[in-house]
Image (cartoon, rainbow, N blue to C red; front, side, top):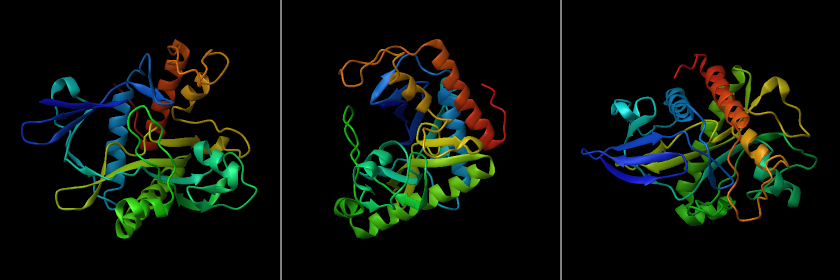
Length: 282
């Protein structure tokens, strides 16, 4: 196999027959940094959960998965995929106000060009899910919010409409399934690309704690940061006085303490088990 690329979390290889082997590692990233140490079993959890979600969404949009029959050293973490021509837009849907969307809203009441009603707070449910795309920034740079008109300028009106509809359809189905299991899907990011037949297809991962915000429904309370099943726990520790890290210093974050690593692993396992109804055994 030929190694093609290593990202923040995944490694990509090309097989002899032209397929791609995508391998999820235990690496974890936050604020555009890959952190040390990794989170045990994270790569396997992400892979299993993505495969479960691809199956739940197969009638909504096709995906790139061909097989999980991979070399032994990648078992549980690797997936053979079709090659896609990726869309140059990060496709994001939000059903609740938090994170970067909250910062935009507090500035002028608008998120990615979508005007929202006044009076919303951290964790507020939106009147309806919205499409809030962003740029795909090169490694080391931040993605920037895009308006729908900017997406049209990037890919054309017809494709932009399809991107928005698929993203909202994926979010809506995912949010319904998650809520049945006591989890709020606050927002999610998906990757789309064209397959060899020109069909828009889901790639990368889908509806995992790395690409989505998951909140326990029974603890949801607008007006404050929400407890989460995702890597927000790591982000919160990094910006806390305990870490001693200045996000604006330009220096890499400190190593994650053992308690943060273990608690983060627990949250990923809890998300997997509560969503799928299956126990996680590595």
